[in-house]
Length: 92
Image 1 (cartoon, helix red, strand yellow):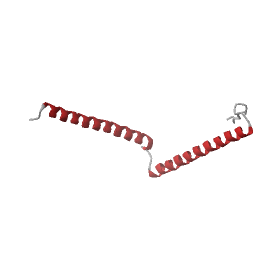
Image 2 (cartoon, rainbow, N blue to C red):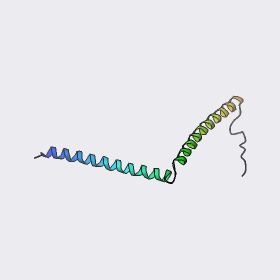
Image 3 (spheres, rainbow, N blue to C red):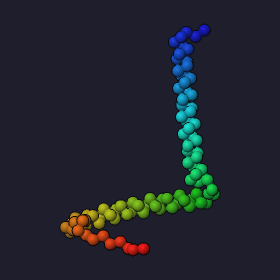
């Protein structure tokens, strides 16, 4: 027969295992739901195309950030203040 301490220790270990399983299950369900909502109706070729587009998007964002930084450096070198430079946007 288990002593009070041993029984408490086993109960606590069982509780921790159950809590970990519930957290894992909740995380698994959430990830599965998110995956299905994002990729549910796609076949393999569409998923591959989406990966390619995401990589291209990442590359273009990096290129834009580098160009914006170069633009700021040029403005600083030429003494042009960013606030005084007119911002031209296309209508449409």
